[in-house]
Image (tube, rainbow, N blue to C red):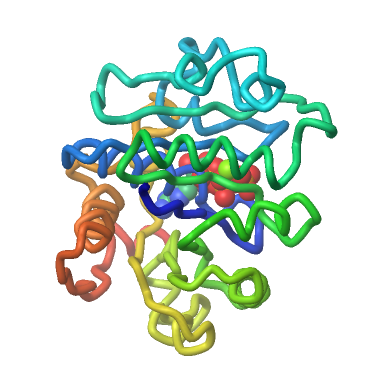
Length: 256
Ligand SMILES: Nc1ncnc2c1ncn2[C@@H]1O[C@H](COP(=O)(O)OP(=O)(O)OP(=O)(O)O)[C@@H](O)[C@H]1O
Ligand SMILES: [Mg+2]
């Protein structure tokens, strides 16, 4: 059985789906069979982030309803032969969506893949709290700003209460010039406040946006964000990879 990792955040729009796609693709590229599950029900972004949206015929709602098997619902990626996606439903009948039914699907999935990653909605709502205890590990993505870090702190406490023992944080969207002026929080200060391991620091990088537009995960690309994700993937695979100092962006002075 593989471990189930929930990728989440307190605030929305901080880069969870980008992280799930990048890490999922990166683990698969490293030869690890990986299943990514979109539990951001109703919105469904992960298939787009992976460039798989035209191949999604079934989704988790169909599996929960029992109209299709999990195996049939999984979308296999041609670009990443070890990667599978279980897409989110746009709508799910409430009666089929229970902690137990989700647990059954995730347990089956964790028997099929070495890594199971869940892209989740942001926040602290009832649905979010229902899915929290299903995870063995939690990765909280935060922007390096006070309000996002405060919300990340809340989510990390909920995770702890739900029994998610291994918790870490990704600081995403770092802009060196704003770190320098103090307008953005230093990643080390963020982990001091949150009291969890710093899994990685991702710079604000236009490449993330162009990759997203092309339906391509940013990991494995020769871009600052891509390389930062590659380091995260190596850390997840057990390598000791230090977090390098944050470099100034080329042409950063244009933003001053
Ligand atoms: N490091 C980064 N540099 C630049 N843009 C980024 C970075 N990370 C994410 N983005 C962009 O920010 C936007 C939000 O990212 P994403 O959809 O991954 O966030 P999310 O947390 O999943 O959002 P939601 O809460 O709506 O599900 C996207 O347009 C994405 O391309
Ligand atoms: Mg998302």
